[in-house]
Length: 204
Image 1 (cartoon, rainbow, N blue to C red):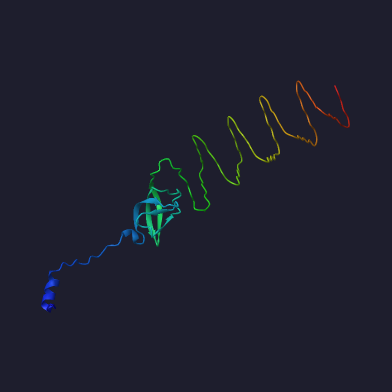
Image 2 (cartoon, one colour; image 1 turned 90 degrees about the horizontal axis):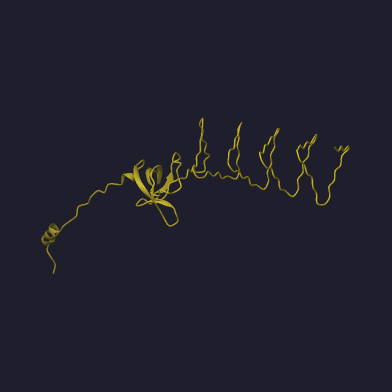
């Protein structure tokens, strides 16, 4: 049965109609928007901000500390990127804090620089160069391990209070002008052949 036009208007008038509402955009989505967020790690270890995964994360050049999952950070919108400007707090208390200059050279200039490791100090690099006018190494025990060791000096002096022991398969000493060995008691032994050769040999 068909209803009249007036009946249709009456039905629509009594129906509940939800009015349209303007949804305000997240201020973080605006260019230059700033917010404090918590970083989350995905299954591959990549970091993102929960709820804003459409924006890729980047780290500001001035923020040298490498961010980790769980960090509370301050981010700013730069196009389609969320740039981490500073790390406010760290959830992983025992995590190693890493300074990452993002492949840029890092140079520290100061009148005096001191590095202190209460337990250990480790320097790792394929090439290590030390340029200084004066160098001093003080240690209770010093170990040097290398496949090849080259020392070049104009003058060298070494003083050993107790025992100086050298163990090698072959030992070669070449003095262009003079060789002097002084000792209160001396001994020279050879299990196979001992050869003494010189233009003049003085004994006694």
